[in-house]
Length: 312
Image 1 (tube, rainbow, N blue to C red):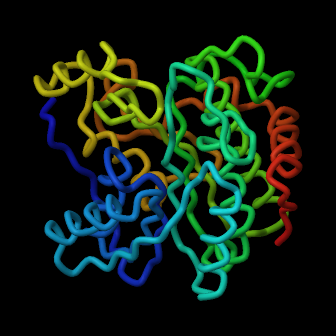
Image 2 (cartoon, rainbow, N blue to C red):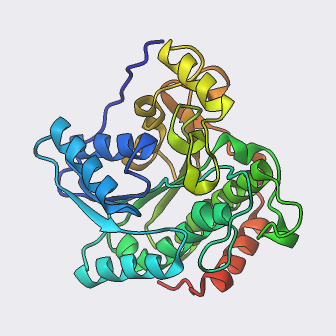
């Protein structure tokens, strides 16, 4: 299968799309593909200079693209509130939201300014708070929301007794726990929207495996060098073997939020070998994400932790 693949995307002119984690990697390609289809992009960025550079790269590809870069650090609930307040003040309905940003396996346990374990805070809790605060705009836009999970959500479990991993921190288990929590939230968003008539289509997507900065050297996260895994993934991806590229890995999320064929409460990911790469297709929702009681539990715990009560 060639490295360069694409899907048909409807005309999104006039639609407003919020894409987290769009400064690089898969998130950048998601934003670029939606912009090419005509969507106006709001690009939240922890590093504004990096965000502006990414926006400039998208404009090089699509000169007519409309992109606004806004400050957002998903690991800070105050930053989430400030970002949401700015959009609420503008009052423009949100048509598309891709909750894609994340961090993966810092070798040592890290705690956010709010006192939460970094992976849980960034991958799940910050996105939960973002959706909760933006709910009026998402309802007004009849938004399509996709939550970017991971094949890691198909193993492990939510660490209910110690969500902060204060005891026995394990980088990969903590990552899986955060992604399962995030997927449960997306499924509960689908159920609550259907029950309350919010009109929000909540889907899940996953990118397969592709070379991004998630496993690259990040001294700020305690990772001085690239992991052996990312070096292997890069080499295989360059050869078009087994793993996808960031552009191909972006397509499941794009399909989930833009295709009229996508259905709420479903999971979309690469259709190739072991779902590591390939064109997007519907896949069975991971068994861990089908537990409605667990989904309600993580929703209620998240409301308390984030200090946000979800109301339309």
